[in-house]
Length: 543
Image 1 (cartoon, rainbow, N blue to C red):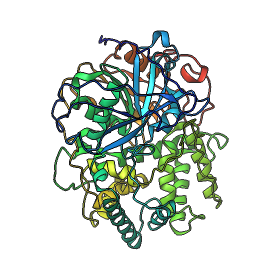
Image 2 (image 1 turned 180 degrees about the vertical axis):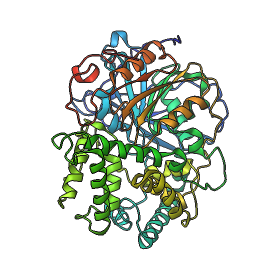
Image 3 (image 1 turned 90 degrees about the horizontal axis):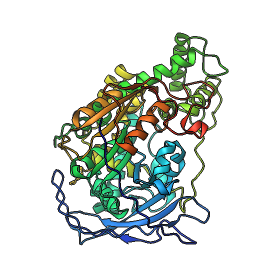
């Protein structure tokens, strides 16, 4: 059994009648930090964040922090970080702050944390202030924006095919568009373009930790947020209190084993997203075919017949798109639709059935905007590209991509094609001088909890095993479930182990597997502890 110490409560609460993300800008002063792989020097005190209500009547507080653009030049240009907080609901038993990164890269935490707040286990919401932020280069923070107007951005986006290219003409258009994007960004803000790396964001996170007054970091990150966590844990190993890594990226795959040479494979092929994505599509079709059309509209009466129906639909769309729904655009919608089981898988089945009947589907529904000043910030493609391509080596030769696509399609079908082209924007993008290449095994002050999902369309379970193996002291918890991350697809069992770990430092026993999600695919949602009933995440735990 492992236990960790709690963090002392910080009783300071500041509110204001009117607030905005930019209200209360605070310069996070501190010492110069050494480069990737080096230990930080003793830090000077950091001023607390000046919180105020995001908008009148909101339950969320907002603040703005300022941090160095280039940590090797602490007296140089500074940039803004937009930060959001939901205070602990039981302040008398408050432990400290739980920092949350929603993934991406490119996920704006000021938007996605409020939208997903109710997915956190109740005990965690009671005991922690939950804080998130838009990482540098993203959303409401100082952001990468390489266009003079929304119309210019839309024109650029229309210059390349939706989804991914399917023939030589579309490949030429795709690479021309990404070459143009890199040129625009280089002209518009070359400094920011080179300083939005994960290691830069990890240093920002440590400044934020100091600003909320926590001596060590408590953190939950999903998807890309896991590689941010691993980077932080190796830059600041003595500052780790508790870290949950959910939906993991393999650090060696991410960095191409730390090599500075041009990569032969793309980031997501190294990560095996092509295989995991293909297996998840196949599971979606099998489960759909095993139930009725009342539960899965695309069902053809059996798994085999439903797979055949799907293949026929994909072949038909190659020749005869339905409105703007081309083959490639549909595949990308499928991959995105598989991220959340409920209601995502059911809604996806409905869209596929519409296409089968030759009807233009209704676009996917998005959650309502949260109560923050700017709930719809600009999040253009250059934002995730700047982080992904600055950090992770990818092929520089456009001729490599069709060859890689052929192999990925053999392994993962349509999903393989999607994941091959996901990093085409990296072909002309410079690697960041700040990118972290390892090591990944520095002993941390406390152990780390790693969570992997059996059928994840993006981050395979094998990457979770790799992450747990790479870190110096980590425990793997697996979920025999579907879709992307356990946070977005709740399991009372996972919530129970997360809560015990984050609150008391108790890790699950080695080899623990949670056997099911609270709402399996194509099932009617029913109360099952945790969020659904308003009960705590510790309800109904099994292992």
